[in-house]
Image (cartoon, rainbow, N blue to C red; front, side, top):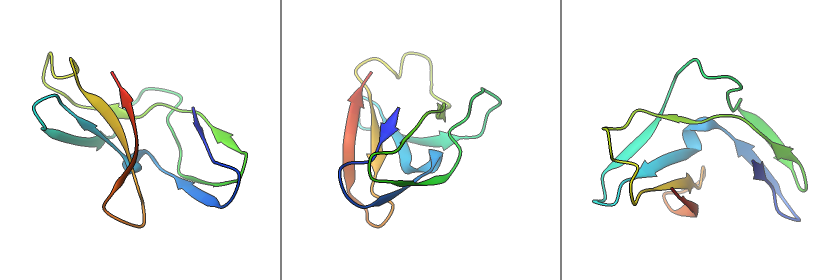
Length: 83
Protein backbone atom coordinates (compact mmCIF):
# COMPACT_ATOMS: atom_id res chain seq x y z
CA UNK A 1 0.00 0.00 0.00
CA UNK A 2 1.29 3.45 -0.90
CA UNK A 3 0.17 6.41 1.17
CA UNK A 4 0.83 10.14 0.77
CA UNK A 5 2.21 12.12 3.71
CA UNK A 6 0.52 15.01 5.49
CA UNK A 7 0.91 17.53 2.66
CA UNK A 8 1.21 17.62 -1.11
CA UNK A 9 0.17 15.46 -4.01
CA UNK A 10 1.83 12.34 -5.39
CA UNK A 11 1.31 10.76 -8.81
CA UNK A 12 1.22 7.03 -8.03
CA UNK A 13 2.32 5.00 -11.04
CA UNK A 14 3.71 1.45 -11.32
CA UNK A 15 6.66 2.83 -13.28
CA UNK A 16 7.75 4.91 -10.27
CA UNK A 17 9.16 1.68 -8.81
CA UNK A 18 12.31 -0.29 -9.56
CA UNK A 19 13.91 -3.41 -8.12
CA UNK A 20 17.54 -3.19 -6.96
CA UNK A 21 19.23 -6.59 -6.58
CA UNK A 22 21.91 -7.17 -3.94
CA UNK A 23 24.59 -6.91 -6.67
CA UNK A 24 23.24 -3.49 -7.73
CA UNK A 25 21.43 -4.69 -10.87
CA UNK A 26 18.33 -2.56 -11.49
CA UNK A 27 15.10 -3.88 -13.02
CA UNK A 28 12.25 -1.59 -13.98
CA UNK A 29 8.59 -2.54 -13.50
CA UNK A 30 6.93 -4.37 -16.39
CA UNK A 31 3.40 -5.06 -17.65
CA UNK A 32 1.69 -8.28 -16.54
CA UNK A 33 -1.81 -9.59 -15.97
CA UNK A 34 -1.73 -9.82 -12.19
CA UNK A 35 -4.76 -8.19 -10.65
CA UNK A 36 -5.27 -5.81 -9.05
CA UNK A 37 -2.67 -3.71 -10.85
CA UNK A 38 -1.50 -0.41 -9.44
CA UNK A 39 -3.21 2.09 -11.71
CA UNK A 40 -1.73 5.52 -12.30
CA UNK A 41 -3.56 8.02 -10.12
CA UNK A 42 -3.01 11.33 -8.35
CA UNK A 43 -3.16 11.04 -4.57
CA UNK A 44 -3.85 13.90 -2.20
CA UNK A 45 -2.43 14.05 1.32
CA UNK A 46 -3.76 11.19 3.45
CA UNK A 47 -5.10 9.13 0.54
CA UNK A 48 -4.00 5.53 -0.14
CA UNK A 49 -3.85 3.27 -3.16
CA UNK A 50 -3.26 -0.45 -3.48
CA UNK A 51 -2.19 -2.64 -6.39
CA UNK A 52 0.51 -4.93 -7.73
CA UNK A 53 3.76 -3.79 -9.33
CA UNK A 54 5.47 -6.51 -11.40
CA UNK A 55 9.20 -7.07 -11.97
CA UNK A 56 10.66 -9.66 -14.37
CA UNK A 57 13.69 -10.94 -12.44
CA UNK A 58 16.19 -13.74 -12.84
CA UNK A 59 15.54 -16.61 -10.43
CA UNK A 60 17.09 -15.82 -7.04
CA UNK A 61 17.55 -12.09 -7.77
CA UNK A 62 15.04 -11.22 -5.05
CA UNK A 63 17.38 -12.46 -2.29
CA UNK A 64 18.88 -9.44 -0.57
CA UNK A 65 17.17 -7.08 -2.99
CA UNK A 66 14.90 -4.11 -2.40
CA UNK A 67 12.08 -2.29 -4.13
CA UNK A 68 12.76 1.41 -4.60
CA UNK A 69 10.22 4.20 -5.02
CA UNK A 70 11.59 6.72 -7.50
CA UNK A 71 10.93 10.44 -7.27
CA UNK A 72 8.84 11.14 -10.40
CA UNK A 73 10.26 14.68 -10.61
CA UNK A 74 13.92 13.77 -10.13
CA UNK A 75 16.49 11.01 -10.25
CA UNK A 76 16.67 10.22 -6.52
CA UNK A 77 14.97 7.32 -4.79
CA UNK A 78 12.63 8.42 -2.02
CA UNK A 79 12.03 5.11 -0.24
CA UNK A 80 12.95 1.42 -0.13
CA UNK A 81 11.29 -1.83 0.89
CA UNK A 82 13.63 -4.73 1.64
CA UNK A 83 12.55 -8.04 0.12
